Image 1: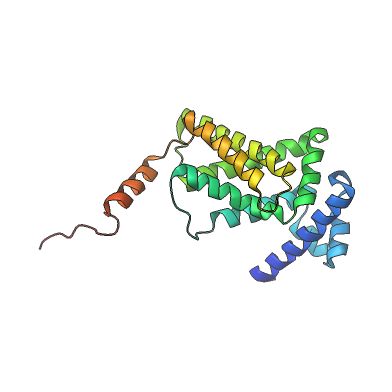
Image 2: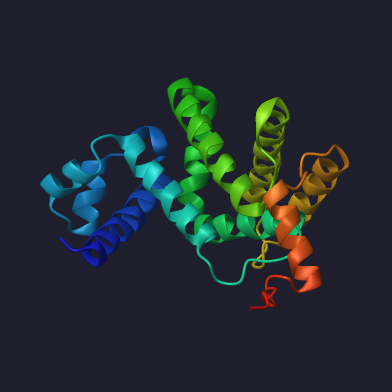
Length: 212
Protein backbone atom coordinates (compact mmCIF):
# COMPACT_ATOMS: atom_id res chain seq x y z
CA UNK A 1 0.00 0.00 0.00
CA UNK A 2 1.47 3.37 -1.04
CA UNK A 3 1.39 6.49 1.12
CA UNK A 4 -1.42 7.88 -1.06
CA UNK A 5 -3.37 4.63 -0.70
CA UNK A 6 -2.90 4.74 3.08
CA UNK A 7 -4.15 8.31 3.25
CA UNK A 8 -7.23 7.50 1.16
CA UNK A 9 -7.79 4.38 3.27
CA UNK A 10 -7.62 6.36 6.52
CA UNK A 11 -9.83 9.17 5.24
CA UNK A 12 -12.49 6.69 4.14
CA UNK A 13 -12.45 5.05 7.56
CA UNK A 14 -12.57 8.39 9.38
CA UNK A 15 -15.58 9.51 7.38
CA UNK A 16 -17.45 6.28 7.98
CA UNK A 17 -16.39 6.00 11.61
CA UNK A 18 -17.31 9.50 12.67
CA UNK A 19 -20.59 9.10 10.85
CA UNK A 20 -21.31 6.07 13.02
CA UNK A 21 -20.21 7.86 16.18
CA UNK A 22 -22.59 10.70 15.37
CA UNK A 23 -25.45 8.25 14.92
CA UNK A 24 -24.81 5.85 17.81
CA UNK A 25 -22.49 7.67 20.21
CA UNK A 26 -18.83 6.95 20.86
CA UNK A 27 -19.55 4.25 23.44
CA UNK A 28 -21.18 2.11 20.74
CA UNK A 29 -18.60 2.90 18.09
CA UNK A 30 -17.12 -0.16 16.36
CA UNK A 31 -14.12 -0.25 14.04
CA UNK A 32 -15.52 -3.38 12.44
CA UNK A 33 -18.78 -1.62 11.62
CA UNK A 34 -16.87 1.43 10.39
CA UNK A 35 -14.78 -0.78 8.10
CA UNK A 36 -17.90 -2.45 6.74
CA UNK A 37 -19.60 0.89 6.08
CA UNK A 38 -16.50 2.22 4.32
CA UNK A 39 -16.11 -0.99 2.29
CA UNK A 40 -12.59 -1.58 3.63
CA UNK A 41 -10.93 -4.93 4.40
CA UNK A 42 -11.32 -5.60 8.11
CA UNK A 43 -7.89 -7.23 8.36
CA UNK A 44 -6.22 -4.09 7.02
CA UNK A 45 -8.26 -1.89 9.36
CA UNK A 46 -7.15 -4.11 12.24
CA UNK A 47 -3.52 -3.76 11.19
CA UNK A 48 -3.64 0.04 10.91
CA UNK A 49 -6.04 0.71 13.79
CA UNK A 50 -5.47 -1.94 16.48
CA UNK A 51 -7.48 -0.01 19.10
CA UNK A 52 -10.47 2.31 19.00
CA UNK A 53 -8.24 5.06 20.37
CA UNK A 54 -5.96 4.62 17.33
CA UNK A 55 -8.84 5.97 15.28
CA UNK A 56 -8.90 9.20 17.30
CA UNK A 57 -5.13 9.51 17.27
CA UNK A 58 -5.23 9.34 13.46
CA UNK A 59 -7.61 12.30 13.44
CA UNK A 60 -5.21 14.18 15.70
CA UNK A 61 -2.29 13.48 13.37
CA UNK A 62 -4.36 14.55 10.39
CA UNK A 63 -5.25 17.83 12.11
CA UNK A 64 -1.61 18.39 13.09
CA UNK A 65 -0.41 17.71 9.56
CA UNK A 66 -2.82 20.34 8.27
CA UNK A 67 -1.75 22.82 10.94
CA UNK A 68 1.96 22.36 10.40
CA UNK A 69 1.87 22.43 6.61
CA UNK A 70 4.23 25.17 5.44
CA UNK A 71 1.89 27.36 3.41
CA UNK A 72 2.36 30.92 4.54
CA UNK A 73 2.29 30.77 8.34
CA UNK A 74 3.61 34.15 9.49
CA UNK A 75 3.12 37.02 11.90
CA UNK A 76 3.57 37.33 15.65
CA UNK A 77 3.55 34.39 18.05
CA UNK A 78 -0.08 35.17 18.90
CA UNK A 79 -1.08 35.26 15.23
CA UNK A 80 0.73 31.99 14.59
CA UNK A 81 -1.01 30.23 17.47
CA UNK A 82 -4.35 31.53 16.24
CA UNK A 83 -3.71 30.24 12.71
CA UNK A 84 -2.42 26.86 13.92
CA UNK A 85 -5.45 26.29 16.13
CA UNK A 86 -7.92 27.34 13.44
CA UNK A 87 -6.27 25.00 10.94
CA UNK A 88 -6.97 22.15 13.37
CA UNK A 89 -10.59 23.24 13.71
CA UNK A 90 -10.93 23.29 9.93
CA UNK A 91 -10.11 19.57 9.94
CA UNK A 92 -12.36 18.89 12.93
CA UNK A 93 -15.21 20.62 11.13
CA UNK A 94 -15.21 17.88 8.48
CA UNK A 95 -16.16 15.32 11.19
CA UNK A 96 -18.06 17.69 13.41
CA UNK A 97 -20.95 15.57 14.70
CA UNK A 98 -18.78 12.51 15.28
CA UNK A 99 -16.22 14.51 17.25
CA UNK A 100 -18.98 16.06 19.30
CA UNK A 101 -20.10 12.53 20.17
CA UNK A 102 -16.58 11.77 21.41
CA UNK A 103 -16.49 14.94 23.52
CA UNK A 104 -19.86 14.07 25.07
CA UNK A 105 -18.47 10.65 26.08
CA UNK A 106 -15.44 12.05 27.93
CA UNK A 107 -17.11 12.61 31.34
CA UNK A 108 -17.97 8.90 31.57
CA UNK A 109 -14.72 7.54 30.07
CA UNK A 110 -11.71 8.41 32.29
CA UNK A 111 -9.30 6.29 30.23
CA UNK A 112 -10.23 8.09 27.03
CA UNK A 113 -9.93 11.45 28.79
CA UNK A 114 -6.44 10.58 30.03
CA UNK A 115 -5.25 9.39 26.63
CA UNK A 116 -6.59 12.40 24.77
CA UNK A 117 -5.15 14.76 27.39
CA UNK A 118 -1.70 13.26 26.87
CA UNK A 119 -2.07 13.50 23.08
CA UNK A 120 -3.22 17.12 23.41
CA UNK A 121 -0.17 18.06 25.48
CA UNK A 122 2.09 16.49 22.85
CA UNK A 123 0.35 18.54 20.17
CA UNK A 124 0.66 21.70 22.29
CA UNK A 125 4.42 21.27 22.49
CA UNK A 126 4.62 21.01 18.71
CA UNK A 127 2.30 23.99 18.35
CA UNK A 128 4.41 26.05 20.75
CA UNK A 129 7.63 25.30 18.95
CA UNK A 130 6.15 25.99 15.51
CA UNK A 131 4.60 29.25 16.71
CA UNK A 132 7.83 30.28 18.44
CA UNK A 133 6.68 30.12 22.07
CA UNK A 134 9.43 29.77 24.66
CA UNK A 135 8.77 26.35 26.17
CA UNK A 136 11.97 25.44 28.01
CA UNK A 137 12.25 25.02 31.74
CA UNK A 138 9.56 25.40 34.37
CA UNK A 139 8.17 28.53 32.73
CA UNK A 140 7.85 26.63 29.48
CA UNK A 141 5.83 23.92 31.20
CA UNK A 142 3.45 26.57 32.52
CA UNK A 143 3.12 28.09 29.05
CA UNK A 144 2.37 24.68 27.51
CA UNK A 145 -0.38 24.12 30.06
CA UNK A 146 -1.72 27.60 29.33
CA UNK A 147 -1.83 26.76 25.61
CA UNK A 148 -3.72 23.58 26.43
CA UNK A 149 -6.18 25.72 28.40
CA UNK A 150 -6.60 28.05 25.41
CA UNK A 151 -7.24 25.05 23.16
CA UNK A 152 -9.76 23.58 25.60
CA UNK A 153 -11.65 26.89 25.89
CA UNK A 154 -11.81 27.25 22.10
CA UNK A 155 -12.79 23.59 21.70
CA UNK A 156 -15.79 24.03 23.99
CA UNK A 157 -16.83 27.05 21.93
CA UNK A 158 -16.38 25.07 18.70
CA UNK A 159 -18.57 22.27 20.08
CA UNK A 160 -21.47 24.75 20.38
CA UNK A 161 -20.65 26.87 17.32
CA UNK A 162 -23.28 26.46 14.61
CA UNK A 163 -22.00 29.30 12.42
CA UNK A 164 -20.75 28.46 8.94
CA UNK A 165 -17.59 30.53 9.33
CA UNK A 166 -16.80 29.42 12.91
CA UNK A 167 -17.07 33.04 14.04
CA UNK A 168 -17.93 32.06 17.63
CA UNK A 169 -14.93 29.75 17.78
CA UNK A 170 -12.64 32.48 16.51
CA UNK A 171 -14.05 34.97 19.00
CA UNK A 172 -13.50 32.54 21.88
CA UNK A 173 -9.97 31.79 20.69
CA UNK A 174 -9.22 35.52 20.47
CA UNK A 175 -10.53 36.00 23.99
CA UNK A 176 -8.43 33.14 25.37
CA UNK A 177 -5.31 34.33 23.56
CA UNK A 178 -5.79 37.85 24.92
CA UNK A 179 -5.75 36.45 28.44
CA UNK A 180 -2.79 34.16 27.69
CA UNK A 181 -0.84 37.07 26.27
CA UNK A 182 -1.50 39.24 29.33
CA UNK A 183 -0.12 36.53 31.59
CA UNK A 184 3.00 35.98 29.50
CA UNK A 185 1.97 32.58 28.14
CA UNK A 186 2.93 33.60 24.60
CA UNK A 187 6.50 34.66 25.38
CA UNK A 188 8.57 34.36 22.17
CA UNK A 189 11.52 31.99 22.13
CA UNK A 190 15.01 33.34 21.48
CA UNK A 191 14.91 31.82 18.02
CA UNK A 192 11.62 33.52 17.25
CA UNK A 193 12.92 36.87 18.50
CA UNK A 194 15.93 36.51 16.22
CA UNK A 195 13.69 35.72 13.25
CA UNK A 196 11.58 38.80 13.97
CA UNK A 197 14.67 40.99 14.25
CA UNK A 198 16.06 39.66 10.97
CA UNK A 199 12.71 40.20 9.29
CA UNK A 200 12.62 43.83 10.43
CA UNK A 201 16.21 44.63 9.45
CA UNK A 202 16.42 42.53 6.31
CA UNK A 203 19.51 40.70 7.56
CA UNK A 204 18.10 37.35 6.48
CA UNK A 205 17.55 38.60 2.93
CA UNK A 206 20.83 40.55 2.63
CA UNK A 207 23.67 38.65 4.28
CA UNK A 208 26.89 40.48 4.86
CA UNK A 209 29.54 40.00 2.22
CA UNK A 210 33.11 39.66 3.41
CA UNK A 211 35.76 41.57 1.48
CA UNK A 212 38.51 39.47 0.01
